[in-house]
Image (cartoon, rainbow, N blue to C red; front, side, top):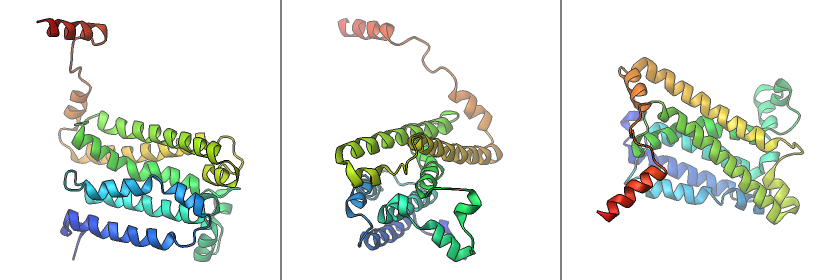
Length: 245
């Protein structure tokens, strides 16, 4: 029986890239709001190109590529319909005969909230893999830094949304911002992204606790002080002394 490990990494990336490009083209046809669709994809296109072009230098695991792919698939659905108008509840009713909004007691379209949560849940592990392999962030930092970057990029995106809404204004600004009248929308989005990343890191932590024999040693070593001498003005003085010698 064919498993995911039987597919070479580069071939697997190529398959996912083709599937995403097909979805991207299909959902680019007659989106609900062309201008909003374009704004939503301003960052997506360079990110996808970067992932494809960088595979020779940094080839991620199939798990990471799959998680990134799933997030991008959902984002393209949101950009096609405009996040606040994605008919997910109608789809759920068609499949189950009941309303997801009624089950969850939601009064608004929460597709954007779901995707913000999944931003953390799906992308925290690929971020961890990047930190671990590039920055050698193991132990405690291999779990904390993905959570930190998820929260910081989520906050940065909220600032970008705010700036775009102020710049474009009108219906386009409102559609891109997608607050739906909730004054705490940005804070809730960031909180959900952070919660998703926290869950992903706790799952990763549990797996490593169970399987990694040197877990405690790695964790402890990561918290050791690597450079005993203070930095700041002390390091500046040392650097000046080195240049004078």
